[in-house]
Image (tube, rainbow, N blue to C red; front, side):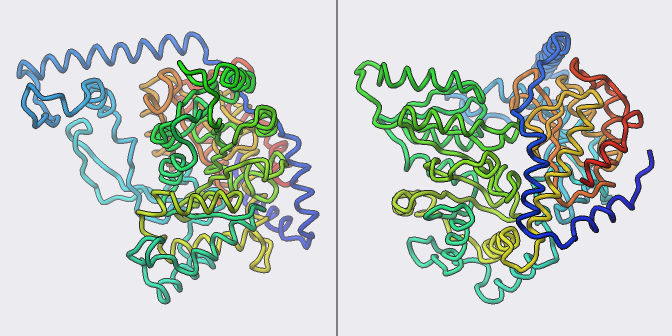
Amino acid sequence: MPVNDNVDQGLEKKMNKSLSSNSKVKHFNQQESLFHSYADFEETPTWAAVVTVLGYAILSALGWLRDFLRNIGFEEKKTANDPNPKDFVPLYQSYECFYTRNLYTRIRDVFNQPIASVAGAKVEVMERLSDDFNWTFKFSGKKLPSINLGSYNYLGFAENQGPCSEQAIKSIETYGVTTTSTRHELGNQQYMKELECLMAEYLNLEDCIAFGMGFATNALNIPTLAGKGDLILSDRLNHTSLILGARLSGAAVHTFDHNNIQDLESKLRDAIIHGQPRTCRPWKKILIIVEGVYSMEGSLCKLPEIIGLKKKYKAYLYVDEAHSIGAIGPRGRGVVDYWKVNPNDIDIHMGTFTKSFGSAGGYLAGKKTLIDHIRVYSHSACYSSSMSAPIVHQIISALSIIMGRDGTNDGQKRIQQLACNVRYFRRQLVDMGFIVYGNDNSPVVPVMIFMPAKIAAVNREMLKRGCAVVTVGFPATALTESRVRFCISAGHTKKMLDHALRSMDEVGHLVSLRYSKQNHHRRWHELNHADYDKEYLS
């Protein structure tokens, strides 16, 4: 079916109608309620799991054979050698090195791909060539224009022109690029206070503190909230930054099955009944840590039920909204907005500015007494440099647009456009017979590919068709759960999404990715496009 450019124009006209702010939010809620479901995880077909494990077994066997050939001098060694004497503890872990040189290197060209443009809806990927099977690369000088389906540019604020960029550039003229100091010394600029006040207002919370790095916001601040004698209950699929922060805290860490409320309640009940190991003393406090949108699964946490358990068992709740703030909910306020819960029912709100705001850094928000405690005891606040002026002004400008403080409805239009794009893209992938993980409203759209050989094949073939995607495999996922992860943006037009869907249809047919048992396997041209177009414009 040919792409109709008039659809984009029709959408623009429709969204530019002089509707009031309240009626737009009401319309958004009506649309969202149609898809107000929990995440769907279709089971991996048994045959696909078996073939995937066999594939890894064959690759490992070939790897051991090649290691043997390298050791006897038949094949050239290209790996780094441990500089320490033989009687030292090895500097490198043996299996990690084995995996890197024999499995990862074979498909290294599809990872860490450099770009040479703004990471907006479209991006230019720098072509790399290798004549030694991906041990080394050379740039060809060619740039491959592609639709960007891998960046977390949810609201389309990753731009080099427009009000956000202008404010960031002007801030350099006033403040320079850096304060060269921490906030505990001479780096506490006025714009930092402005950002924190604005973010607290946006979240309807008492106070907020911002940091220069999203990963460090979790890793270096969880230790200020929990310690020895405390218990952390962490979702099994939580991000590495949350896992690292929990380990650094010194608290006991127990995991519960992903989004499994029954398992979480069982862990809470056991913790209260049995207390600490050996002594049976009560835990000083119990901290539940979950994510709003899980970045690899596309699922949303079951926040209302988790809040119910938190109140029932007198625990504390830490919610990481890195992938949900700005991208989920009728006003873009994350899963709190999506589930319409009271933000004060969550003790610690965490989020990043790296994604929906098109900048860098992270924040923690909550009660003023809690945030004041973090300001004093956080290693991130004490030892890291204050945030750069252009970084902060990019956030302030984007946040002002989202809140409507710029006098326009551009922020609300971006939120609605993202929700519309997500439903349009997800639904067609499902209807074509792909196994798609996650919630219907999640901007993270994982499509399962399972087998290791298909990780590279899907990435390369999509790039040939002008789509830059992210493919992920073990150890970032379970051994049998390799996937291609699409990240949808408000900056994507219908024409871009149709091109991506057509490309995925072709690649899925080429490498056999239609695994679903719940949905019929159909090609993209066989779908009823009038139905999707009607929904897109509604």
